[in-house]
Amino acid sequence: GANPSERIRFHDYHPTPSDVRAEVLAGLSQTQKRLPPKLFYDRRGSQLFDAITELPEYYPTRTEIEILRAHGDEIADLLGRHRVLIELGSGSSLKIQTLLAALQPAVYVPVDISRDHLLDSARTLAERFPWLRIRAACADYSVPFELPLDPNGSDLTAFFPGSSIGNFDPDEARRFLLRVGEVLGSGGYLLIGVDLRKDPETLNAAYNDAQGVTADFNLNLLARINRELDADFDLNAFSHRAFFDAAYSRIEMHLVSLRDQEVKVAGHTFHFTQDETIHTESSYKYGLDDFHALARDAGFQPERVWTDPHQLFSVHALRL
Ligand code: AVJ
Image (tube, rainbow, N blue to C red; front, side, top):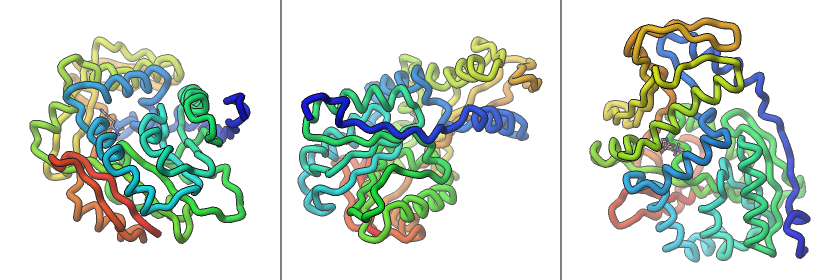
């Protein structure tokens, strides 16, 4: 219809605040303290991430969009049109816009953990694409998830761009792909963006930008925990650190304690020695063959892969 909001259905699976509390307390109790990267994406964090994607050093987003633009028709020819198009971690739904005209999905199902951001983006999209039906789902795809799909088996395509798969350890990644496979069923396609392994200088620069946006993004995690879990992290007493670890083929992001300190979180006290870190994110980088092997382990058949001329980034079509 003409009214954009009439073409949006919203399904809230309530990724629960109590999960956040339990995960934060568990993560900070480990010998190597850690926090799950999905907690980056509150409203401010999602805005900061959007700012990261425009940084000169952060090549993945613009390169992936360039690949999708260059090969959109070919992608649609391979996957087929009028399918149900699920996007896992849809954020601002920017990338899908490069494919909507070519794919002509019967319905678009954006899935995101950030409720506000999901709704803002769905409204924007409904205005820009007057023919598009949207079924937005607020859910946490890092744990087994439900989706608002009709049981009468249409052909499903999942879109998982941005190399978000890189946040998982390879074994978690395989289990995640298996779960996506269960949602998709046979004949399902997964179109997935994967950042490629490359020289450490390029990788390190992408996670240590000159403007310090990535540092703000990392530190915002502590601001969020202060606000939501009644914690007292001093944001001036932690700093951003990111580096490529070649042995694991991953970028690691940490928050480094600048002094000995105690922090209260939801009634619990955590001690930090000077230079002790909280590991906040891993971002794995794959060779094309490594990723194909991972996909096959999870039961997918690699059908096609598209890359940019500099082999910075890859977009894979996997079939079930
Ligand atoms: C959204 C997980 C793909 O790993 O590059 C960007 C997140 N972290 N800068 C990435 C991120 C720091 C991003 N992913």
